[in-house]
Image 1 (cartoon, rainbow, N blue to C red):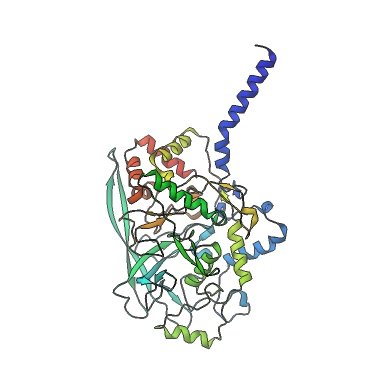
Image 2 (cartoon, rainbow, N blue to C red):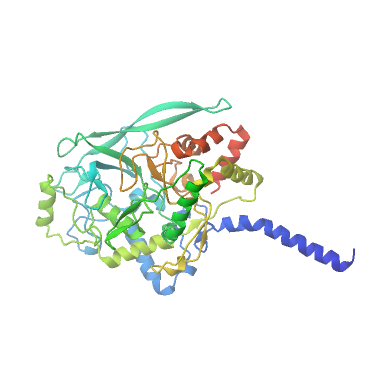
Length: 463
């Protein structure tokens, strides 16, 4: 072999070696240019300032301040932070999204719902096709009230336990919540009441998900249906208050919000009672007369939060970076990733998407991202059903939640609770609750050997 041929061979080997690393390197950039290497308790709060035009820095900082702000009851010397109530659950966004992360379910019936809420409705639809609010308490139970206005009451959970056995004989204890109410302030709830307990999800990476083209999401639904493998994602079309028409839903546990901005406005109104141009009316159901009277007494001006402030809060959500996956070149993690795909999990938890044009914040366009979601609704079976429709989502359907950053939940928030109501206390419990369209994937994992199962769980923990 000549020196020239040896040189060529070495160059070829180096190229092949680098090529083998490309999938790992690409996956490490889970949020494209909006990816952080921080894996500490602050991992969900990182901002890649170099990707943001300097002229927007002050607006981004202002949005961050509003998200972290503890809101106060009107009137206030600072009207920008006033408007809490008349009824509310918590006084700050980070009360439910601590460190921009995930909420948790209370362990016992004596613990309050610090970072979760209960949706309420009755059969039928509202004027835009969404859930029909409970006539006395509205669409969400608000525990607290401002002076002169009684809180609506308290929801609590009672846990029912059962065990499932894996193919190797391992037993896993699962828990399911039963929603109960006490100290109701305005009489009995409707006999036709439908409820749904929801923990607060993490808030990073949302702008990237909004920037995924609708056509790509619909193409995933079409491909799943054509594959005839029992997985058939469905889009949810919901009311867009700004555009005044129905558009594709992307956010919320049932994909019932179309944009980050409207998701924020909905949380401000539902959780804190703060009105915006998208939710301009105070949450005062007709039966709650003291609620309406408080608005007249205090001379409340609505909306309480300006459109500019709402834009700045949305900007902050757009720019939050996604944590990069860890240890992706480790043999056990590689094996777990392969098993994740082989089991069928990637059919819904799509590993890769690409963002399109995004005029609201152009820096998010053209990013290859790895969120592990298809943003579609899937029938998850009777065990996870809340029996509460939400636009086109039925009572058994849930949006595929993104998995990026999920392995840092314990580090950031001090707990590993998963699923829409926090019932799962680890990855394996969450998997075993999958049913319906995900039944075959769950069974494939249930039949795995202990070493295979460990590799799969390690892979999830490294995301």
